Amino acid sequence: MGEIKILESLNYIDDILISDAIFHKTVRRSDKLLKNKIVKIAVCLVFLSAILGCASFFNTQNHSLPFSLKVYGESEKGEVQAIDMEIDKKIPIDLFETKSGVKGFVFSYDKPDKNVPSAVAIVSEGDYDGIEEEILKMADDSTQNYIFYVPNEYDNTPIEQSFFVSGFEKDILYEIHLIINKEGDKYYVNLKR
Image 1: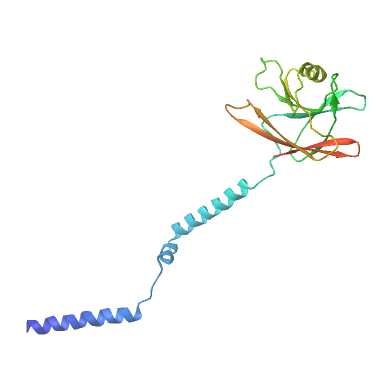
Image 2 (image 1 turned 90 degrees about the vertical axis):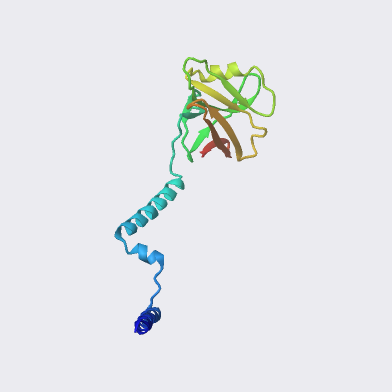
């Protein structure tokens, strides 16, 4: 009698397992997870933050520098004037000639330390000693450090040049990309990021 009960139970279990196997629907684990409302909200927030993060990374509309970069030109009265530069903005620039006959473009930026005297960096392929004082007298602003750029050829434009500026924040070096174009008899400079 005990054997019959065991056989009946086994048949019953077989019937249940077989019928479940026939009517069983496979449900993916991700479908089970997405039925939970909290998980749906979390997935949406992660997706939204990823989109916003990528959008802010590719945003190139930042037109400000962490310091003031100036370009020098002559006014209509013949006086030297400084113009603040902005990224992707075309600004007129003049070619200055020193007393020793060296021609170049003058740029400046704020000194990080106001107690240190102004400095002049000469960017060229030649050796032009002694013109630093001429540039400092020409610009005459003790709050600025100066860059005197002497290109090899003045008429072959665009002239692309990069400068490195440091000292505004601890151990940070900024690279500045400039493009100088000649239109007619005037030069224009464009600051690129």
